[in-house]
Length: 119
Image (cartoon, rainbow, N blue to C red; front, side, top):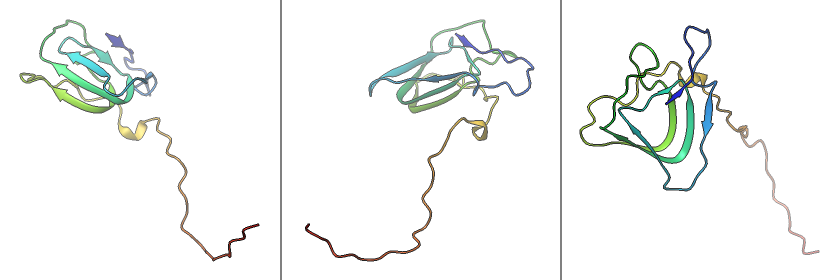
């Protein structure tokens, strides 16, 4: 269980607790119906997630929800027979994500040719 307890704290959400997983291609994250991960951002773009139908827990993130986190992963697969959604709606949206995009190049304004010099 990974539980970042926000309660009714204003502005509290999964982008305040961040896990950046670095591993090898083919590494996996395994979840089941007993997994509880509350309000955490998990950035694991080379990881595959498999969600299994087994497992139970009495723990929750509140109001019976078990997984209110945001996952950025390579792939997500539910085992056959998983009838309960693995993710409850997160309490944050992607517009709140701590993603900093690289600067963009502007349009080309001018160009010219030049003779190459061998010296």
